[in-house]
View 1 (cartoon, each protein chain N blue to C red):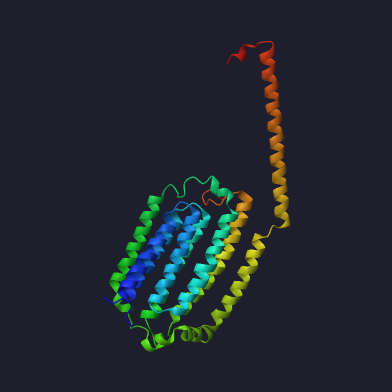
View 2: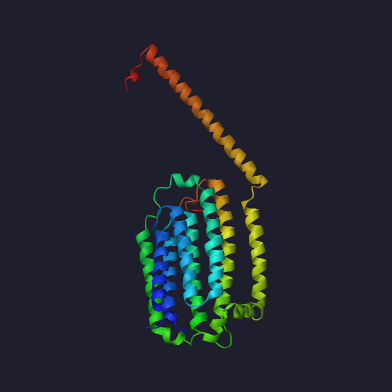
Length: 214
Length: 105
């Protein structure tokens, strides 16, 4: 089967454009929306080349679950956004240079050796059946062990995320001592201001001292 | 010109490079997370392209199986990274990556 070139080029341009929007937009929520659009476009790319199961998985996990987590993180760390000045580091032109160098190396490798990678396409009669059966066969026969390990990994990540995000006792103690320290400093500052104000009032009311004029 | 493996590899390289640029240049740690996701997607596009156009009779669609593993690991990574960011935010009241510099010598 040949891929429709027009559809492919349009989708490819949209993929890259939305990806650039993710890193080029200063507002983090706008970047998250661009990220969702980018994941949708990648799913469309998978559909365009006939990878139907991957497209569905991409929609479910990348376009559905991961942006929700990221937007939750943005909302929960909202306090740091308000005083967000510059969204990029000072030396971003250097980063751009490094990135363009990397891209040039990759494109050079593709230009030199693409003939050796092209080993004929996936057979049309299998594509008509969909790729799900073949992927399932590969996952449960050849890659059965990685498949099971992945389930264990997901469980560990779940438990780890819950453990990390929970407020434990030591952290509560830390926060309380931090709060006490802040209050103490506040009290000291307050007292000093009070004293200054009293001294200034005394100077204004009565005896003028030589250093009053300064 | 028919669409082949090279076209997909170019898209993949573009996605990966945009992700690298975001990772190097953004300050917000959540934006860094998004850039890592872009890089994962670039790798996935390459894997799917190899499964589709670098077909081998011996191991059909191995690339797509790999891509599924990558998606799994990306999901786990995001969950743990978001938890870490929340902890960092509670401790330091910031998620700007260049302000979390306690380990600087």
